[in-house]
Length: 115
Image (cartoon, rainbow, N blue to C red; front, side, top):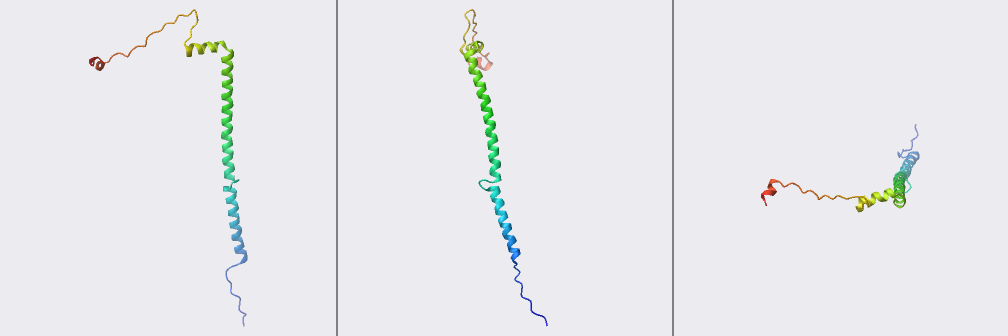
């Protein structure tokens, strides 16, 4: 005579324990990627920092150009004269200025007939 075997419920402790590990692992990966201090946030912050560094470099270069322009305007007589001639229309005492009137466009046939 054989002894009866207990019926198996199909549920083992080791199997359900592994599922909890998988769920826990997925949750940790989710926080590591998408959390406030996650990897994606770190990459985004690094890119923003790099962009800001480039902007700072451009602004430093522009400041240097402006400082050189200010120094030239304060101390370089050739620069002062060039700006006075170009922007203010100034001339030296010994120069003669010739001004020519602007040329009008030649009349076209349609313009002549309307007169």
